[in-house]
Each structure stands twice: as structure tokens, then as C-alpha cells.
Length: 151
Image 1 (tube, rainbow, N blue to C red):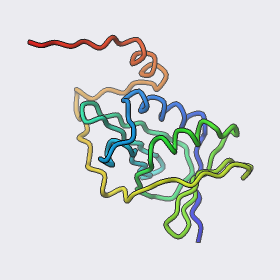
Image 2 (spheres, rainbow, N blue to C red):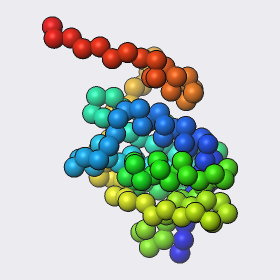
Image 3 (cartoon, one colour):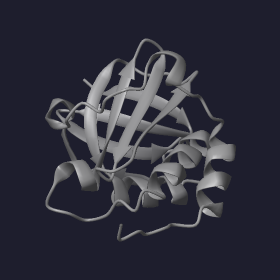
């Protein structure tokens, strides 16, 4: 039986663009080349890390069944960028993940791993926790100048 998970394409692309700024890429470590997709309680959490910085992007108002998987970031990002409909659908059938456009004209097979294999990323709780709008965080990350110290 096929499971359907629908997402707003624009919101998903914004979340993935922020995670892309972490400089994820092909690596032998799954945690560096994959993002964790975890659908729980009417929200989708997307986890990404470069082992120095962790980002969790949350999408609300998506329609999905609860699931937990890791998707290859580059494959996912290219697929979402190429889908020009307002909604994209992540299907799961017989353990195989496919991202497709709402009109079913575009289909992309996703490289995936079990979500439980992705290490838990510690969350900032309490008064130190912050929430930043996707567009503001993306603009801030683009304007940051990296600094290096040998002290």
C-alpha cells in the first residue's frame, strides 16, 4: 500500500536552502550527506548538521503519516528545486521513497536510510532556545563572514 505525504514545495525548498548553507555534501558519513525527515504530530522536522552546527527546520500544515527516514540531501534538493507545482508528494511504497509533483509529471526516486540510524541532534531548551523565521535566518547566514583564529 502506498503512503502519501504532501508538502508545500516553496516552504520545503526554503527549509532545504537553509540546511544547504551548512555545506552538506557527499561524504561517507550518512549524517553529513543525508537529512532526517521526521513527521510527528502534524509537523515535519528536517534535521541537518555539519557536525559543528545543527539546524532543525519545521514545517507545519503538511499532510502526512508519521514517518522517520533519512534522505540523501543533494538528490532531495535537486528534486524539490525542479518541481514547479505548489505541492510535492513524498510517497512510500514497499520501503521505496519517491518525490513527485502534484500533477504526477515529475518523479524522483529518493536515496534513503532508516531514520533511526541518524544520531539524535541535541535540542536547545529553555530560555536559550530561539525561533527564527526561515527567510531571516537564510539572509543572516548569507551575510555572515567566517572568521578564523589561531589562538
